[in-house]
Length: 478
Image (cartoon, rainbow, N blue to C red; front, top):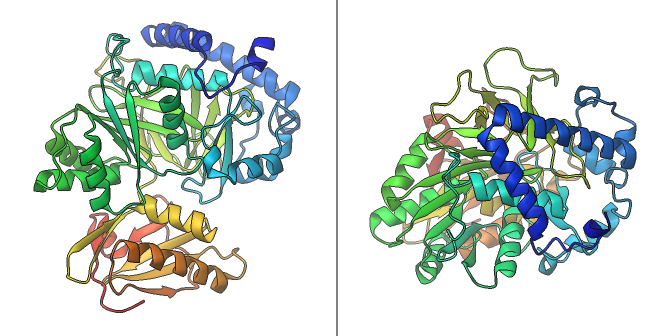
């Protein structure tokens, strides 16, 4: 424990990483024996730590995982000061730290990385990672991100000569940005890792990528789609060896478009701020849960175990790697389904299908009638950071009329609308969107009829046509 206390999480710990890598390698070879045994040992350690050192969990659990009542982000954020096993961790101190975006990827309290996320729920969450959990995530990605077969990732030198470009949310304590910034600082320029803000206009993103000339592109599927369209049109000339995706729903149509554009392997990953690498993709395009490090329980609307093979209402996650901020039976709002049959790739970790975050690309026009696509991630980030609002829905109707809706619980919704409207229009003017109109609606946010999920950025016309995006003109001044 004295050694652990001296760790600075910014730099990967070689001993912890070697141990996590070795354990992950062996459990991948024998998931039904070695993997299961390791999972049980990690679960026992997690439960013991939570019951002995977390006041929150002392009140909620017993000796078995099923003894713990499901928890939600809202509940954990409300009880934040009783949650962590390091009693120095308080919400007030953490919020003071994350208020400075320049401190992203810097150790907090000398030893922790901090991630912030609102996710699909729209509620801000703060997630703390210690050196042990980061070693586990590093090992999983090293061994499974580029393929699930045991021999897929044994070249220790792969990546050193690559040029990585990450297009995503930057300038804050976001999980993807913090993780890559940590690696960029630790590797001292080899490989090269460049970051491009997804808030930039797509044309500007393309210009920056042309200068970086990456060999590996890391981004959200929606960003990859827009870049693939430019690649196919001849306005972007990237020569990629791989594309790595995550953070949003990824469809077969998106995969076909991106592969056709870049002519290279496209690798999908399912993760969250609560656990960075929940599932990794095999050569058949199936997501295998990393069950040696994480436990998923599909549940119905009453948080009871799901019966049958359909999609769950949500899923309970238990993170076996993180002992400082335990997550036991934590509710993710993603709908999941375990495949009923083993995958033909031979990997015995179970295959999962995910119905997760899938907001829409919005397509507007500039003053000359040219197309202006805007990423949903960019709009969400601008509104959250600029207006301080996380519970909202934008409905793009027809000719670029954006209707704004809020949850009924939001106090002073008209004032919130004015803040949102100001930052939204200022941002879209930077993209040269012409004549956008907005309006405030007191109606409740729309939810998906099939899943009940709330989409925060919705192209109404395209949803009705089943395409997931809309072409909108901008006929009037905002």
